[in-house]
Length: 230
Image 1 (cartoon, rainbow, N blue to C red):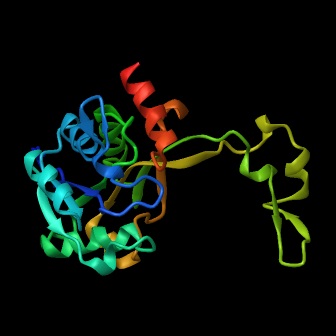
Image 2: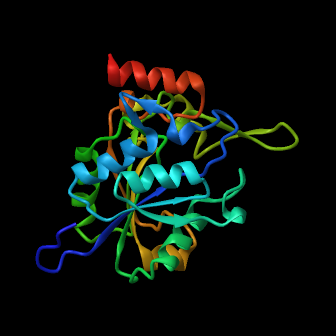
């Protein structure tokens, strides 16, 4: 991304492993003629980010990424299992590419194809204020988290915060957003030090719930196709 003045370097990282239990071949599934990987790449470029990296263990995904003009990082098998953490794959890519600590890592998961370049730009703009460790996208929740119960092994229930919250009008409770998995930004050095994608304090940029769909199953893919192609 062209960096005016002292603006930090931004590198988009798209984690796309080959295996998927819920939807085999998911990351190459196509919506509107573009794969899920392609949608992530397009969102980055529409936001003005020119350095896009795809970390993958799949030859077909790597070929797709190269066709899209991306840098490919070959992900080790131990970082591409169903139990592997996304942050470990991202940090492997950071180390492989020797990215400086102040590089902003823009994490774009392929499973959020309804995210746009404007969403990405909004996160980058918010993060540029410099008052947070990470910035991410989120959306409204159907049920407020403070109106739920925690249940221990003995079956005893307790409130998330206070009993009064369970009977309070929603308008009196703090505004709640859930992370929707679409966009994350954290400096490479901060991510490495924390061993986590999210480094507090956090800022959240809201996305509409209808564009916060996460593709994990064939039904999710069909819903995304209906929204993008309809």
